Image (cartoon, rainbow, N blue to C red; front, side):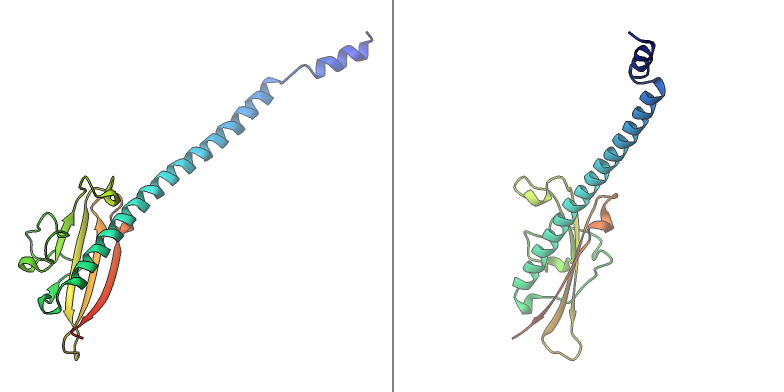
Length: 165
């Protein structure tokens, strides 16, 4: 072997320590970016699950109010405060105007798939007589997850008008 052949082989023997460290730093930054994406995806999925549950609960309550006989609707309620202070445990299985109740908490039951993993959803509704329109009511329903971390990010809000004819 000639001297130049031996010198060529030495330069091509493998990675140096610096090259290995640079490769590890690049790999660590890549793994950190992917793990951050996983955390964001998990959080977004949780918020989406809670939003679906609140939308479902608000839709059910609105349908219940819309299916109630017009002369059984009682104006009142609030979409920002609980009326009255004593809140029954559920509202989707009873008549919406029972004892002047305008808010309630729905909870997960064994057969309710849309609430699985969400916990409790708080519903509020308001029925208002429309000024100048006899026999017409404006109905508002809002729902929000009771989870402290999700709460306002999962809010659903629906409105409807009911009239005698």
